[in-house]
Image 1 (tube, helix red, strand yellow):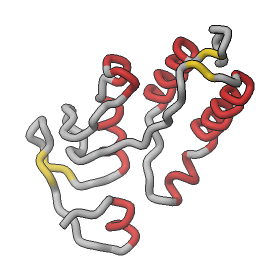
Image 2 (cartoon, one colour):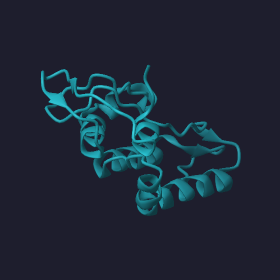
Image 3 (cartoon, helix red, strand yellow):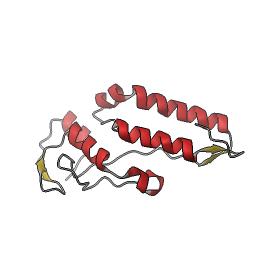
Image 4 (cartoon, rainbow, N blue to C red):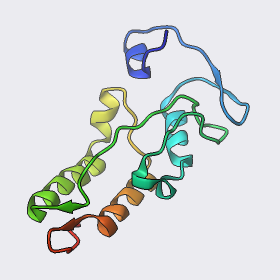
Amino acid sequence: GYVEWAFAKRNKMSHTQLKNKDGVFLQPDDENFKAAAANAEWTKTPGFGVVLTDMSGKAAWPITGASYILMHKTQADGVKGKEVLKFFDWAYKNGDAAAAELDYVPMPDVVTKQVQDAWKANLKDAAGKAIW
């Protein structure tokens, strides 16, 4: 069977090397998970809905996944929408330690910037004004 890395790591379960798309055998670790996320073409995928399985890159772990933030592009209440974005901005800036404590891997800074650029371009209030 398969369990997520955080569960396997915390429970000291055995794991294996896997061969990635570039033909490199890797152990699961934070840097290899980050490499998979960093190599993805986030901005070329509608809604950033990238599947991180089998990403190219010598250091990319082949079984990687991401969690997503879902928001309506048009916010009925722009003030509330902006407050939600402020929370996620805080989490991106301050949440790395909390993520690591749970054995999750923070998104690479380059990806975080792409996400926040998308907020600026796509998220609007009911009047069409950008909320970020």
